[in-house]
Amino acid sequence: MDKLLIEGGRPLSGEVAISGAKNAALPLLCAALLTKEPLTLTNVPALNDIGTMLRLLEQMGVKVEKVGAGGTAAAGSAASTDTVVLDASGLDNPVAPYELVKTMRASVLVLGPLVARAGEAKVSLPGGCAIGARPVDQHIKGLTAMGAEVSVEHGYVHAKALGEKGRLKGARLFTDMVTVTGTENLMMAACLADGETVIENAAREPEVVDLANCLVAMGAQISGAGTDVIRIRGVERLHGATHRIMPDRIETGTYLCAAAAAGGQIRLTRTSSAYLDAVIDKLMDAGCDIGIERDAITLKAPARPTAVSIRTSPYPAFPTDMQAQFMALNTVADGTAVIRETIFENRFMHAVELIRLGADIKIDGNTAFVTGKPKLDGATVMATDLRASASLVIAGLVAQGETLIERIYHLDRGYENLEQKLAALGAKVSRVK
Ligand code: UD1
Image (tube, rainbow, N blue to C red; front, side):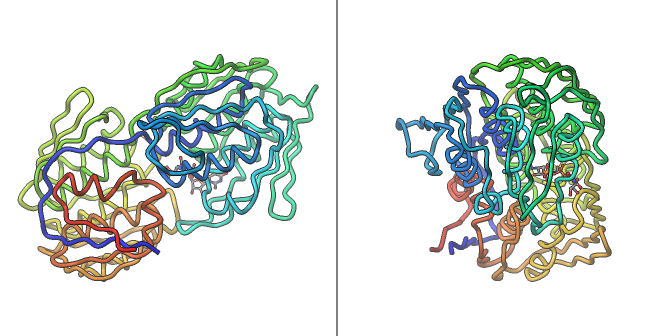
């Protein structure tokens, strides 16, 4: 298994381009299931999670053509690619098997589109993951309200639309908590349902809006995306479209956090500050100088960051996907930060690894108390999930000496060309096979 070797203690400086958003790309790939016509997506990041989703779609009968800078690449590979053309005219197997779903929870995003288009679906339950139980009861509750018969047998969700000609019916939906993929699944399903669907307590995440924009380009009738009430008037069919995926706000935030912690000055291009208010606010509180351009962000780090407390909440509040990176930043900040995780019940696994690097962190339930130290010391640590891994990279960049991060396959799921991008910022990082 690959490891990442970081020689820390060097400030970052330089410029990198941000990739398309993983969490926007995954539902957008699934949107292709809703139509017989080709859907073309551009700015698709080359990530393992994207490769997994493409394999999942291919085994359902979707034709996938990847067009990279150097021409067409093999489907399912994570080779550098930018444009993906998906043709679901031959959809013939509405099944998502355990082998693929277990590696990526977002596979559940095929459920809504499959029931809407094929009238039925069989999707493996994602099961637990490192950061918590993460059930899909809200996805099931919504589809049931839309007239699907849903049962869970042998670890699989079986859903069948009982309406006329296997069509879902519009309904008034309310989710018990704000769920991002739940909102996306139900919004996609509602596009082809008979009548109007209203999703209340909808997620307001920018990725939901990106998906809605693409669905509207495909002929869907959606209003209210980006607010907590989304209305969808079902249509009989959707058509093909071309859509550019939004920049990855979490990748952007991760590099900003890295520079804030390691010191130096960086410029991130092909991104936007529009979806990062909560993160940028905290970086400014930490003492960073932030410059906003139309599609770029610059950051100049202070000599030493000031501790910043955070509380994760659904968008537009501080994102749980940036919690681990801010914990890493606080390990070397001046003062004590209180970090409260309210979305996932077990999302502090990076803390014990950061402690191995010399950090002072105390955990009490969903709250972490981080007292900054002037320095960390390199050590061997283990990545446990995607964003936890990112926090270890940041800590490794700050720590004196060498840090070896094991199990970096988590990073390959969500950060495109991580080593190359860090090297462009002057970091000493190498992949050890
Ligand atoms: C998405 C993001 C993930 C991010 C998370 C929260 C994608 C592909 N992933 O994950 O990166 O960390 O939003 O911003 O976009 N819940 C239930 N029942 C359900 C659904 C959710 O109890 O049916 C709970 C979850 O366990 C969690 C909370 O609701 O505690 C929010 O989860 P949710 O927004 O659904 O996360 P994901 O959509 O899986």
